[in-house]
Length: 234
Image (cartoon, rainbow, N blue to C red; front, side):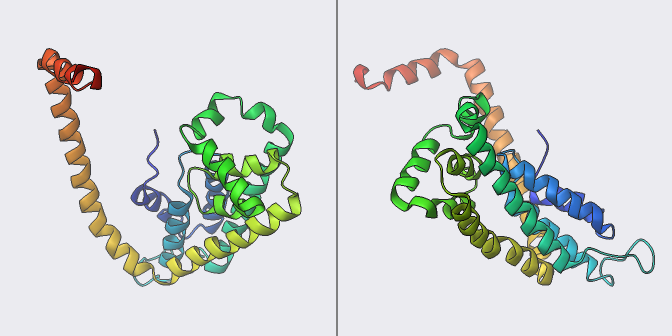
C-alpha cells in the first residue's frame, strides 16, 4: 500500500515547489481520491501542500532550481484546494443520488462503513437532519459514505451545497493559508515527530515479531489460555 504519511507526502510535494501547476493538479487528484474513501488523508494533503507553498515563499531557505523560478502561490493554492474539495464532495453526492441504491450493495461501500459506520450515519441524519452534511465534512472515514448517503436519502442539492460549502470554507483554505504562513514551526515539529514515528514503528515490529514467535513455539499454551478465559469455562 502506498505511503501517505505527512513526511512522505511532503517529500513528494516539495519536488514541485517551483512547478505550481503540478502541485495544483496533484491537489485535485488527491482530493478526489480522499473523497471516495481511498487511503489519502485529506488533512495531511492540505497541510503538506501548505508547507510546499511556505517553501516557495522562502527562497532564501529553500532555493529555487534556477533564478526567477515561479513557486506555488498561497492564494491560488487555497482557491484550488477549496474548489477541489467542494467539487469532490458534490460528485460523491450525485453518485449517491443517481447510483446510490446499487453502490451501497458493493463490497467497497460495505468496507467503508464497516462496523457501526452506517448506524452512525443514520443516527446523525435522525438527530441533525440536513446539518449532518456539514458534520461529515469534519469526520474522516465517514465523508465518502456520508456524502453519498446525502444524495441517496434525498437531501436537496441546494441544502447540501450550502452546508457543505460553509464547512469547506471554514476548514480548507484556512488550513492551507496558516500552514503556508507559519510553516517553519510545523517543519521543525515534523523533524521531531519523525524520530518518534521511527521508534513507534520499531516498537510495533518488535511486538509483532515477539507475538509471532510466541504463537509459533507455544501454540498449545496460547490456545489453552484462550479457551480457559471463555465465560462458560469459568
